[in-house]
Length: 366
Image (tube, rainbow, N blue to C red):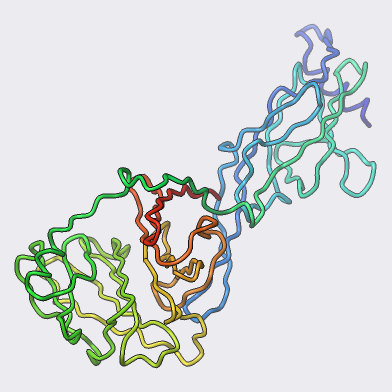
């Protein structure tokens, strides 16, 4: 069968007078991956896990051909969750050498076709036959995929140098304090503050020059008064709109976890004035932010992260309803106590230890 396949290919290489030209080359010159499937598991607001599929462009992960070691592999590992048991690949050989793959369950050799799906869940033997039948050359093909533990943040310490820390405008905080208010956070166009009795949430749209009372949908006794943290990001379902979260401990809270308030802030004057909604935890919600910690919130890569004083990082994938400890965003070793968190313009995470002043920057990899 192998001889017939080689002769079939060789016959295509001849001239118009049916002369057949064969070659003794048995070398893979290029190997590229087609579109791959990646399966990602997420957690819904009810705590149920669900899985969805996304496409990965295989050509973004070049394959290295080690001719001396007779190995073919990708230096940059494919993302965690990539399915490598159904792979379409394009292989080129010098002078049309014929490619076969060894079966994963036996010594049988299977003729390679660029249209066939191949299983690379284990390293595969690839064999190239010379068109003149003089011999063959074997390669071991390996596809590297990141494990779950490979996903995470690479942290770099900057000592106590805060020169690269994302800058913040302190003017609204100073203006709020001058009027007896405590600034709790800001969206892209609004600033929010609590009154000195913690029973009113105020808003300013002119950098703290003037303040008006916000509308609440629940008892003001449930507003956070201590360990307060705030985060805001562009709301993906509407233009000129932010999604804002306010968390912390409250005197009216049951003590089982922090309170969470949210507001969808619409800046279009044609829209009705938004109000703050108290996110009442469900009875079966066991994933709340602990009331015993201090947290700093950031919005990063589509989720909300809470860097906590207990050394854990909590993640909410459902906009503040549930919070789960997550190892992928673990803080640098040695950090303890309260931290301040920020996100730079280049998608860099920043942490500052309040007690020591040490600053860290982190780059995400998956």
